Amino acid sequence: MSNVKNTVLDDPCHYSESDYSASTSSPPLKKLKLELERPEEPTKCLIYIVEKKISSGHLSHLKEIAKKKGFSVANFISQDVTHVVTTLPFERLTSVLSVIPANADVIGLEWLTSSFAEGMPVLVTDRYRLQKSMEVISPPTPVQRTAAEKVTTYDPISVYECQRATLLEHHNHILTDALELLERYYQHLDHKEGDTRALAFRQASCTLKVLPRKVVDIGQITHLPRIGKHSSQVIQDILSTGLCQEVEECRRSEWFQCMELFTSVYGCGSVTANKWYQKGLRSINDIQTSKELQLTKTQKLGLVYYEHLSVPVTREETEMITGYVQRLVDVCASGTSVEAVGGYRRGKAHGHDIDLLLTNPDHTITDTLLTILLSELRKQDVLVHSDVTSGKNIAHVSMGHFHTPPTQGKNRLPHSSDTTTTTNDVEEHEERKAPCLVKRVDFVVSPPEQYPFALVSWTGSKQFNRSLRRYSANELNMTVNAHGIYDIAQNKSLVATTEKEVFSLLKLEYREPWERNC
Ligand code: 8GT
Ligand code: MN
Image 1 (cartoon, rainbow, N blue to C red):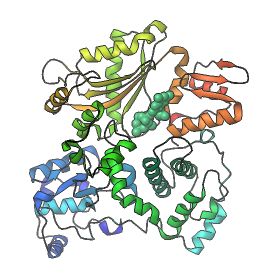
Image 2 (tube, rainbow, N blue to C red; image 1 turned 180 degrees about the vertical axis):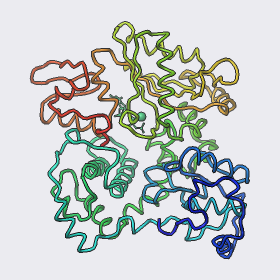
Image 3 (cartoon, helix red, strand yellow; image 1 turned 90 degrees about the horizontal axis):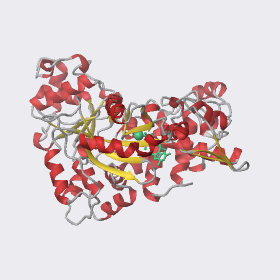
Image 4 (cartoon, helix red, strand yellow; image 1 turned 60 degrees about the vertical axis):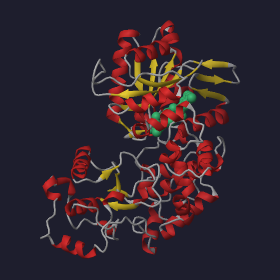
């Protein structure tokens, strides 16, 4: 990120709108004007501002100014975006954005401030453009390497992720981001579960996440578990040159970018995304306007509400919806607890959905809780779409996000629809979506005796759960899932009343939810 040093405004966070207006007396701006060989057409410019590492106040301030100055700012990332504005290093973007548009310029915030000052989008020169930085992870010098080797002969670690503490923050993001990009690439390519190439990259990434320091030499990690040949090569390339060609080719490939984009549509998995790609479709707009696609009802709604559903859910939104649901069940199913699980419980700042786990000490209530809750949400008119996994006590819903409980009138949300939405219903959604924000919520109801097992399972991560299952089968001859633990040798189910007891039955050291981010 060296060449995006802000020479126009030192700290854009502390400038008011007037600071963005043209101030031709400042030397950096004069210099900038000389660089302007060809001003870009304002009409062709669609800006996307990456929210991460920009405070919400500053972000809305920037958007407000952009609006006043006639710039188009997209609410979500797509191939139509021409300028991706960010304060992050290039390498972090792939883990934050579902796609980096093929033809977009990826630029620092100072491009925006210069453009505000000029009153039009200024030419993107190298001074604004983010570099795939060689400096972020430059090859260690021999001296550094010797020093590092002395201090970082990593202690051996368990082969099972559930026996380690994996935090969200760690020392090897550049390596793990690269490995997880390959994980996603091969997930799209193979689209199957189990021991796949994709899983091998995830496992290698998880090993790197628990290391107490940044890796500087491949020799430091060759004795560690779960780092296969392919992952080793990727790590070695990055350590020695700063980049791995394979990763960069995958990142740049149009197919991968479209797969990332299309699978961000609710109801679209890798198989469907690939079909859309093979038909020549390349953008969300292509999908939305295609006449030949036979979309499922979920996909239709996913497209109608794309702008809503593609914006990550914040912790505040999760807390607000959890509180809302808790107040509803306090009235219609007294004694019910509502707990936000999934990535939220593990401490993630954003998620793709909200996972709510509900239980009640009274079995007769948990038996009917999901039906009662969904009917109450329908009465409240906040349910946009619901898809109940029959017999499993799980409902995938899309519901309105609101600042005050919806009442008659202006807070009212679109009408709920059942699983037989017709084209007309979808059109009705199109007309009514504007005044509200819609988020995906998974409701899971657990009978009281299964609750601790459900809590572990729905907190995740997915990799933590995989590792629990593998560890239990290999080491204890037990099966474990959201409903309980089964001891195969003794032919009996085990009982637990708390999450800590679940760990203890599995002879595992207890891991806090935020230590399960593998
Ligand atoms: P996110 O922040 O992007 O939403 O990520 P997340 O919250 O970690 O993942 P998720 O896809 O929302 O799933 C939350 C947890 O529920 C994960 O640990 C996942 O393994 C688990 N989970 C499902 N589906 C099912 C299921 O059908 N049964 C059980 N027991 N767990 C499930 O996603
Ligand atoms: Mn989730």
